[in-house]
Image (cartoon, rainbow, N blue to C red; front, side, top):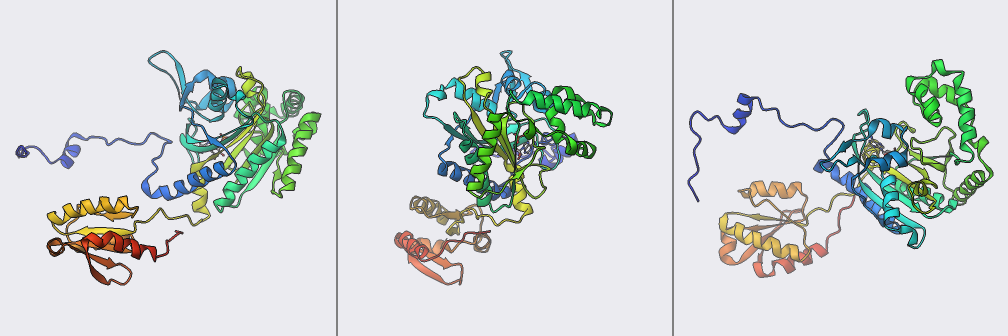
Length: 449
Ligand code: AMP
């Protein structure tokens, strides 16, 4: 090894260099967040329940790329929606392609459905996804610029049984997460019945234009349905007197909605009819729904609906479909608000302590042998001193600690310390794995935080 270069007396230590040169440490982009190790027990809990339910209800995993052509979103979501108008991270890449980070899952899934000819697969096609999305929204509690969603879609089924099953999946997920929620449902009709409703809504609001918020003034001509879910207090009051879409539904939409409610009644799933629920994206037809937690819908935990025309409008076969997505950040926050006990990450069974360089070599090898036998081992090979290592073992709540020191090395033995009662036994190092397996088999696993 070449001799270490000593810093010259003029060279300040690295930590002081930062002060001298005033180096600005890198910072998170606004609206983004790191998911640090202590957060993962919550995140894993949600992700594992999602994967479990997907399997129970026969949804297959699909992951589409984070980047899509910008015009996919413009066409699918609607050019005059908030998401497309104000919130997309769009850029032109080195090949002059206009690309955007996906602001939602459904458009990419619809593209993949068409591109891979999924209309030829056994119908309906049931898919789930889990990943990150990006929206340049105003950051606030529960609203990030990069956030995670789980997403479930049923494509190729027009019957309300599909809508019912998706709502059941959403309800089952929150039940398995021990979170009390309410399911809000509405029907936003279809291109046959919606124009008359939009007209009635515009007629109602036109006379009140001067008192509307600036966003709603714009929405009045571009996207009048969104007037109904404006969060401004004055606009909410006005919405209470506005005409309701259910009174304008065509026969087919009405029948579909009634069928869905009958199915939900049959399985005794509690829901609330909410005539003000319209959702922000243009592609929705008929059923829309949201799942609300403790804040009663200020920031929904999950949301979705039917989009019967999207795939045909994007150039695919006529494929009725329905889906929903939930935000993992919001679900994790809700678990914390409600103080739900979550499963502990699997704790190591034993800790491997060693004293001195020779013992460390032996311990590194023993670690691998134990791991191959399926025993979960923790270690801290870089720490010296038995006290330090036992402290770590205690913190990890392991059941046993194996100690290899100089004496054990020369005797071919290992100390097995029972961490519950502190009793130590000397064991032949060739038999230690067998011995540990026997002792572990007689102990119960821990489960809840
Ligand atoms: P949406 O795609 O807007 O229907 O939203 C579906 C779900 O994604 C919402 O119910 C939230 O749980 C979550 N979500 C949407 N936007 C955000 C955001 N900016 N930050 C965190 N979660 C979000």
